[in-house]
Length: 203
Length: 203
DNA sequence: GTCATTTATTGAACACTGTTTATTAATTCA
DNA sequence: TGAATTAATAAACAGTGTTCAATAAATGAC
Image 1 (cartoon, rainbow over the protein chains, first blue to last red):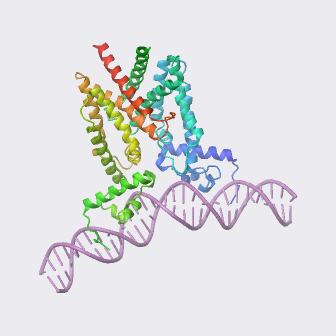
Image 2 (image 1 turned 60 degrees about the vertical axis):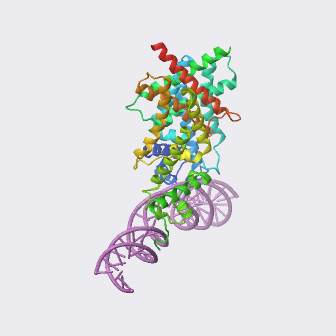
Image 3 (image 1 turned 120 degrees about the vertical axis):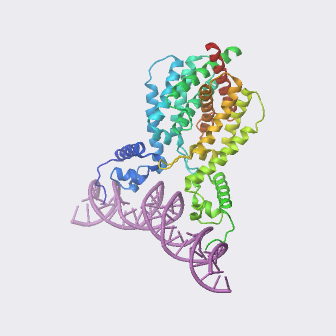
């Protein structure tokens, strides 16, 4: 049988990625497979290989969509003072991980085999996240150097990322719930305070 | 064929775990499998199931060993002032992740299927890590409440953990190398400063 | 010492996985 | 209408975790 479906390559790609997201959200990353995705859209698994190089390629394209969604949510937070904006970013970031645990897991926990390598455009997208942070930090301390901004952004965001990871994997061991917000706010506040004070004392 | 090997259940367990660690370090978590482990120690894959409930159980026992090793290294750091001890912990933690990337990955990134659940003894071990931090924080601020210590320890350690994760997955995007130490030290210093200052202002 | 019982070990099977390739069926073009 | 192209797939391959019946060795009873 052949060419009875009326989908273009682009349409098939979109169809597959949407189905993958649906499966991901419903069944989890562990049960995501080429055969399941294909069955879901009425194609055979082999057909997916006309549109994706391999399963990891499909995952990367999923991750690109997840990342775009995350970045869009960060952008939509609106204008705030730099410090408030950074806190809002942190809360949004962790809330996103909680809202889309499987997509977030695929984005940050999916390991690429050594034979393959993560495409540059995906890493560039992740780096754009850091750029957002750097921009806010630059607003806060206009005379900071680029390397200082880069380092501060990463140090700060490692903390936020750590909260997201450990919360998602249930490794925080905190009694009830809702303490994450407090953690994130103190994390950002203390770090920004420390940054500001140390710059002053150096000047 | 049967009972030609002279290994007790305990000896077989140890044999399998050691082989698994060797494979893990050499080939990576992705290539760790029951058949490979069994072949490595001259047994069939089915034999492993007389000693482990399933593959996840084997992984958990590997993780327990990794965790014991990590905790031992933290304990061996010797007596220091609380603040210096916490910095040393942070450096040691991230260095451990870099030294044993695959074991660390299995410990913190291996996802347990929903049908199974992580054994309590493993989570208890992870919690012991937080207790170490809490103890140092208590030395620093003796009048802090238990819940405050718990929250501060976790907030602080999320940052350290985040550095370890993102460094290991190459998602820090920092130019050369060696910047992690500086990140960790500022991370700890700023947070402890912020904690101290905010307590003062409240008193 | 012989026979029955227990126990350790495994080969083979099952249902999965990602991936490749030859084949087929439908469309397009001459 | 006939030939070339193209879309799609079934089937195969090597791998995975896991189960289970079969088997060979050790042990226990008499």
